[in-house]
Image (cartoon, rainbow, N blue to C red):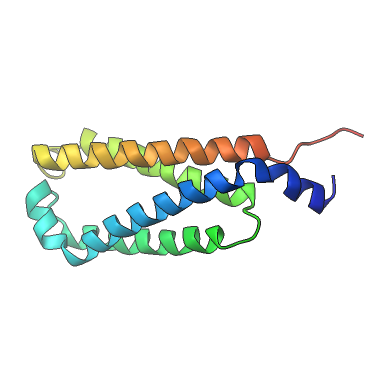
Length: 145
């Protein structure tokens, strides 16, 4: 299969994945900026006492968003890029589970903090599923000769 056939084949979910990535980028960017600029307030509100860790997380999210928006602007969205975004999103969900499971060991989260982490993890999980699905239906097929 040459490049043009591959591009044409994968365009089936291209418009949909662009919307998914845009939604992921805007929501992630918003959370990242909130973490950066309101870290002390959020640390108090959620029980996550390490406001510097919240700022670092916010910076990571802004960098992630830059790559997401860069990918969305491409004329063809490579499935492997979307798989990478999916893996990062799944890791976020796993990290969220770990964060809640460790409640009381490193810090004591408030009920608001727990619900905020759960809600964000659910949204990120939905993005991860859509991204993985796009990769799955567009992954290069290995053919035996």
